[in-house]
Image 1 (cartoon, protein in one colour):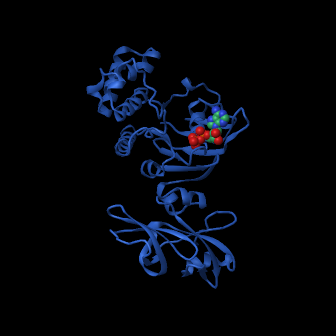
Image 2: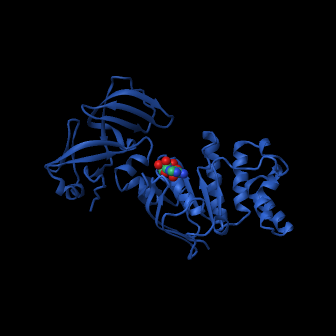
Image 3: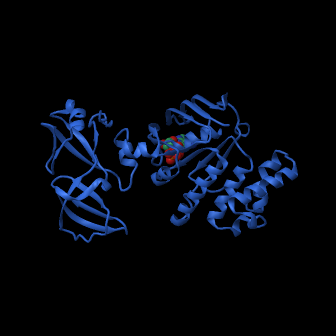
Length: 354
Ligand code: ADP
């Protein structure tokens, strides 16, 4: 059993840059948490504080009920898998995987069994006598995971483990990590800037911006009910479209369209009557047919779907249609929205329906 509590964690670097502000998270035993956000938002700093590679400036870190805030990394029972794999080039794969256990002076026979078991899980049994340079990027990544697995740590930490792999291998390795997580039932904290990785891997996602946690929730919660404009724009690809609209007589009005509101929407927006709000519409929630006119400027066929970029009177818009389309630049297509998100323009917080 291994739970992890991050309580009011702050990080202020020596140059007085505050990279993390009041980070709070309870990770349950066996949970896979993905920290996601743009470069520089404080994800790696948070992970490195958990690993003990950075001092914690404020707050507490608790592993299995024990305060480890000031404990050195080697005593925390945590294993980290890095982006650059950090393998020892002069050692065989076997030796790379056995190394940390040898340092701990574990029994040779037990080390042997652990390495073989990890190699079996990762499909590396035939590679154990090779050197890292003889392996592909994907295999090296698996060795890096193997080194973590043999230690049976309380918590696995992953720092952008897939970013050195090409797109195809990234997908395959992502699925391996998911299987590994299920098989080991391990508690994992995983950092990435890639929202697709977050959506596909996480039990829960922590979305960060500029050192602050923006939202914690399941992938569906972040996709379907983003807490604010930042999360709405970061999760989902292509990103959500945003429109400045006025709430007027129970309708949404702008130069480009007048949209009727449902009874629930009217109730939620009552206090905004006569004011501007931000309307968010995901590209996949725009369908062909309706009374909103889009002038096309590009048509990108992706196979099962087509991305159509266009303009209205005022706003640009990206639509994701569910079929192969052949629009030409200058064509006009009539569309409608089948799902809307509302945000307070001043606070940028989501306006929730009843
Ligand atoms: P991310 O992992 O989300 O890309 P980081 O945690 O690496 O972000 O960085 C968060 C912020 O902290 C950035 O503004 C970065 O420049 C700053 N930072 C990171 N490491 C250091 C350091 N060693 N000294 C000073 N500032 C740092």
